[in-house]
Length: 462
Image (cartoon, rainbow, N blue to C red; front, side, top):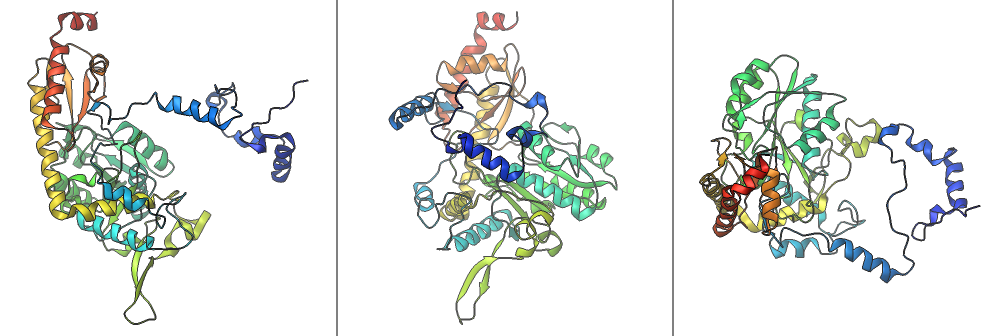
């Protein structure tokens, strides 16, 4: 008889420990915990893992070998974006969030407050100024969750169940939002024109069952929505809420969505002082006007300024805590899950360092670099831009004679990550302030070599 396996790293795998835990919860086997998961989604074999290493140094060597297979965007010329961006992170940001009063193991929650509440209040204030909104939450898990929460807020506010999706949305974001809202809302897609919303189609799709009009700007392809005011006017006339998903990096120069009529502005703060790493550090923001109707529907935490019993002294703490899922637990309107408070502090440091002038200069650089890259790539024979909208940071190109996957494969041999494949012939290209004019010229030259190769083109057309 084979002896039961006890993992050297996980003591609870011992048979007596497992039996005690199962008895405590009244379960006959571990399989009972997965009864709701369809058999088709379960792995019917053991994980493909190496045998456990007894010595710590052997385990460390093995893990180091795995990590060495990765290549970061700092090691290659990268034009990758699609939700996680390679912006410069000032050294002071990492220095501040590495301090013991902020750096914690979970959700930025120390057992004592040594300035964390004030730091998050300052972050919220800086974000509110950037977005020209009044109230901004403590960061949620990521921007996908933030947008999903903004949409579910609209459903509760209006009592309606349909959302018009009027922009091109990143597939990963769309899938995550759908998973989050599907119990309460249906997503109804309205086709775009020239990279941005089709206003006439949006008006035609509006009805008294529409809870929200969801606008992404910049969109999945980096297109900046030019008709937000018209969309907002039509949505409000139909009694719908306007929810905007966005990236705050451009609002030193672009007009914030709230000025054009947005009711709820959501997005991710990864571009504000958070590293790209291997998938990024992410945190979601939700911003609303100083309207109790909207504020009280926000399920996540807010920190505000409060007076104390001591004259001249003040403190920082939760605002309307009793509206949150933390207070109501299972009876809450919505559960917000893990907070990303540490990343909020990082974004706050970044915004304080940049200031209005720095954010304006950054926005101008991003717009200029994006346009230069569009022109440089469009000048390559066999490469065409997909639309004539204003783009921030990202845009798509179509290849006439080669596949996008083949272009990526060919350029990787030259140490270049040219972008993210959208479909067979389309590529999403991203530039930031870290992408120099010389970098863009290098990409254009490499693309010219690939698309000019008759042998390569013939191979792709077989």
